Length: 473
Image 1 (cartoon, rainbow, N blue to C red):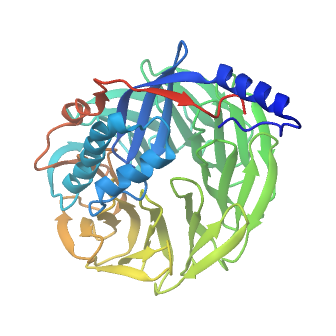
Image 2: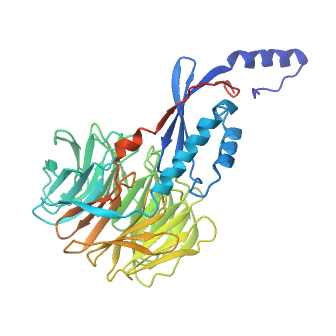
Image 3: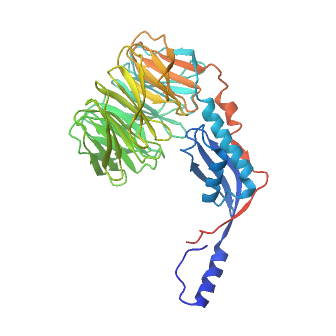
């Protein structure tokens, strides 16, 4: 039904109804597109002469979900999902559920060792496909690697001090962003290695640098107590975000790119409007330095961890703390949400990692014990069923989230680990160490991401016509 002005007479009501019928626009669903992690269903459809896309997040879908019931709920909420496409809808949901199941209880084999920097590594990151990675180093360079072949693809040279932060541009990954102790950040062409922009302005070391979701903005965090925003293309500084009284050590954009989250050694988090460069609010409660913070997937929650031995979960809309998580005996080093935002992992210098239920009561779900030295990094597998930790005991460990059982110890590094990560689809792991190497680990039943992409798109043989009753509201 078209919702418009209330008609004051029967004649006006007829006119309104006729108008609404005329502006109904025929929509035709063409195909489903599957996003494996986090689970999501893309609806590609035509409306008039235009082809459009609508993405439905399925953050509640897990390996125990009733797919038929989920399909019924989706069909009741989405006009494009008519009865005629229910078989394809159910099949798509089962494919997503199957991928989650495949990602559980995985073991990995060492595949490659990346060794080329002449001084110790500082940071590393995967490309989305997991086929390339970046490393930063005390040797003042950033390097791009072919993960599968183990070869160096490119070296980005020009910084005059340690390269401490490295990042790919979002989606296209055509650009690389580096942050350095030389007080600058640089934007590079990933294909040629050319430096496109040098971002000036900070008066102390740049320790974090990120692209916004559209790659139009770059945000930097510095030991000069500020964050800054730049235009990616021109390199022009758009704003200096002042307000922290200690070093700004971590930052993240929300999914819309209109809000920036910063964490500081002053013990606070701040949220900033990237359109006005104004501070929206301050999250206070930690008693010591912030070690990390992040949004969950839909940006409805923020988690932080601190050297005060606690983690906190915040509502960024109401600017309030929802819970203080205690239990670790020493400083917290890292914090990480799973894809659904219902579980939170923490790790500490007390040699343990823990998983917490943040959807309801903030209770402890699992305790991971086994590392012999402090744990500096923690992350969930893409499907959320496993946890990966990196430790100064020179190992990484893989754990089952529900039980806290260690299912694999990844050994071979000769010095402290400071980084670990899953690739987007979970087929590859990356660990980085102070021994000046990165190690690539592949699933022992590895099939490769390109093979799986073949089932991502399901064309609808029986396209259904759907009328959009909301057009013209």
